[in-house]
Length: 278
Length: 308
Image 1 (cartoon, chains in turn brown, orange):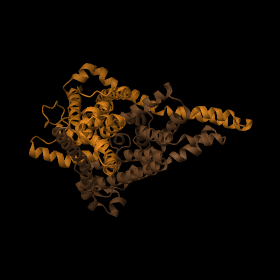
Image 2: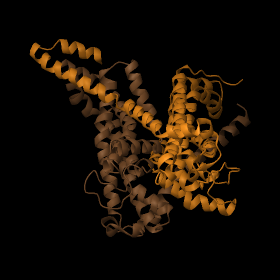
Image 3: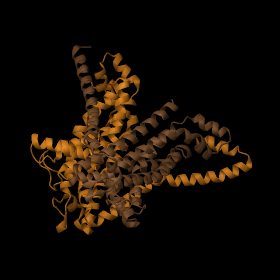
Image 4: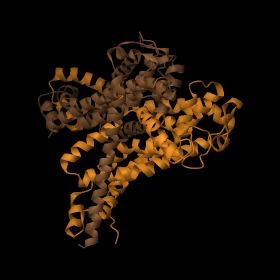
């Protein structure tokens, strides 16, 4: 081993460390910057009151309600479909043309940009099905968008369940569906929930797919056929049109806190899942 | 699994088997339909984007639509060449910034990092993927744009600002997929190289990277797809002028921002032209997605090919 190779190695390792620190630094900087400017704006009235003057003053209650209504409905639609697809892929078929088609669908859908989902949702749900700008149109669009995430994580979680669980269930006379619902799914649950939480995080932060499907009204919704403005859309409009920087920061802070909370729960569930299966 | 299932079902007592068998078949049918949901949605997206966009493309002519330099919705002139070039520019810029940093991070996590450090950095990178794109765009708007304006000149809203923001946004995608590719390289390859007296860095460059190259390529292609498809972040920092940028400091409009900027008020042929922009974007993304799946299937065949 010559000296030059050793020096090259040392320099390279230094560069690799620097890259990792830089990436971590970017994350910390973004979070710190938003929270530093946003937290002072937050107050009970900010989250419990409706905005006035297009958001220049007042709170952001309708956008919080809108965001969570959209997200929960989207998850309610996408979770059964995603988990069902994962069960089908892992428990009910062997690899073949059909699974290839299913997988191609999920993988391609994962790569479709959110603005395309927005266009599609507008054309299909808003106009063609006549749902208008509404929570329902927005949630269906988001459901389509997060479906691949839920399929992939659920499939991984179900595959990680040891075969012995299934064998015991079959040996006790369980049918395949009984085996899935009583032996496989309970064990895979934390892993599946991780995927659901990741889908939730994506829904909360999404802008392009909901702005043309759920609308951007600031009124408090009373039913799923009402249009809403999400926090992300509200933040975008406040910041881009320069309506109110303080309120933009406040909205961003709540957005970031929600995303952090969702990701921490996802991470915690994942740790539990790994601990259970190793 | 299906083998055991079949055996068990046949071994059931008669009555139980009939009841269970019926519902079993029902469940299987329902699951088959459910499993087709993703490909069904993909089909619907394709159909409806094309229905929305083809009238405008047919009216303008495909070639005139993609090669036209003028975008003047008021006069019914729809040429998206500047946006195609805009998307290309910012994507190349994003890759130039994001790929080296991503690969360095992936190598760090896979080969160099002490386990404790890796346990902190991996979830942090996943968190980076969870931050909404409007937040990235906003950070670019309040930090990067003024910085470029004062130190490098120009309006600040530029190819450069977009590239940096997108470069950061593709980090999680490129890192996690190339990390998986590196982890999939058998330990024996590394051991062999180290046993021959190579340093760790020589092993990384001459053994690990060549062995993981198809996975790394797939990671880069998927990162490219993310950069081309990103909308809200780019709108906030790109300046959105409908002209082919002449330099890194010129403002730029991408395919995605063209759609998002004008969808709010467009109607008639104008709206169709925006869907037409979506058609072009969708076709590009699908081509990239097919390309990525090609490289991942080729992954198994990857051979180690150390340079002499």
